Length: 308
Image (tube, rainbow, N blue to C red):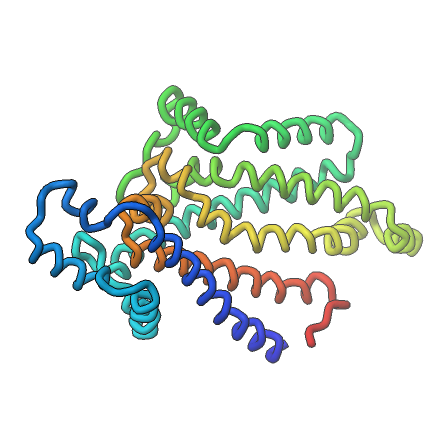
């Protein structure tokens, strides 16, 4: 297990370099001059412009800029924004907000998705199964921003159960409605995945054998059926954590959440290479670490899995 974890950690190095290089190249190739955007289109003296280009290394070729970025990153120096703030400080304020939002969304989709999926799988073809399948299809078909605006209008403005927008200083309670919106689509996928896996395993030979040995139906379902059925669900949830953090741009925009998604959107619009690459680098790390944790959970769910 230890050797396997070390191999996976070493695999993170080329993944991290490849992802940052690709994002750096895309931002570098974007049309527009970030210095001109910084001045708001107003005239700027050549001396000031040259100073700004030298300060942000914009007067250097692409490979030199990328090399400087990687060198500084080794000392945890992520650069400076155009407003003069340290990128690490900006990310340090936004990341905890998005992390709380993603954890809440992941918890909602995992708890409710698995629970409804298990019940639907055990009652395949009946009224409950048909109802949740139709509901999940509707959730998948409706765009996230539409769901966000509808729930914001109903629960935030009409019923006034929650604040329609979050803003600065967002607590756990303020993030529940945005987390529901963010996790709804994934909830539908978890539900359908669990339901399919349960309905397939419930008729397997090992389940009939366990029942023939006199085990109670509850024990057969919880210990045998769910244990094998949750492996593909755990795989999806592990990959989805990184997707939730990266895909929070729309949800954070609708609810005015000061998180990493809105920070990334603003950084791309302003052409801030350092902030954009730093945010994407963190998202890549979250995605890779989440998948590593998922691989570790495999051994707990299925002891037949061994690591070389």
